[in-house]
Length: 213
Image (cartoon, rainbow, N blue to C red; front, top):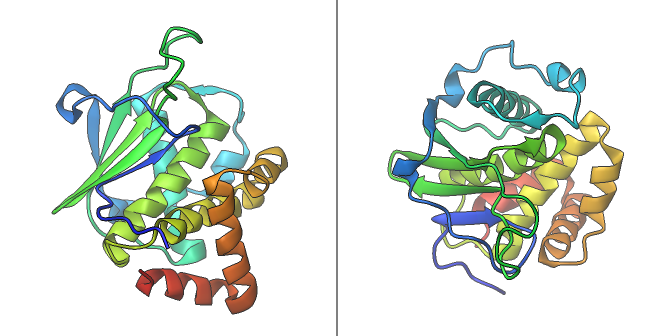
């Protein structure tokens, strides 16, 4: 089993290597208290949006974080208590402008003693932004509720499982099928989580992830 010595930074990326994240102090940043989310942050609002539109503003990014975090709390029981800083990476350069060996980082979570920082890439389509937020917000929950040395397969598989549940709820079938059939490590990890849910039920999977190393 692959062990993670630290989960200070968990990166959603499409390749083995990824560009480094700039220093947090240089990034636009705003605080988010998940315990203050109101009923206005409803998943129905996402269904009414154009999923192909590009998300550029802090306001829209925070709105998606609010909606996704509330859905995870109310539908899956994955509550986050600590204040989280939201940081925005610059918009990606046009294709070919960056090194071929690098893959752009779309999102990451860095844990701290007071909560942590969730870093998100500006300029993603709404459908991609939703997936990045769901995956990384799961890591926020894991930082509060799971062992810090949890096996990477469990750690990433559960984040993919949560993302899969949200995609299914929103009816984003193309993205859902792509997630389920990925042939890389993230696909392997998701299928582990799906099999665990099949054998033990949703609550059984969540309780296992809370304790497993």
